[in-house]
Length: 92
Image: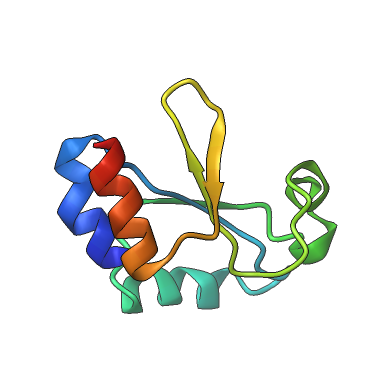
């Protein structure tokens, strides 16, 4: 995701990380963001699997990602690496 962000961010590709980290683990979560070099926005309610996001988006495993168009419609799920790059080239 980091390489896709660096390559496509200037072409209107944005990333928002919604973390399902555990209560009491905020420091570890923030450290991982820095360590992994993820420069985009990050949010979490630190409710882990009890987060309403889990139900709203039917999340069954992590990591999971959604590619959302400018109108807010989910157009793809769980694209990584080369597949994500190909889709972004096509769209952007």
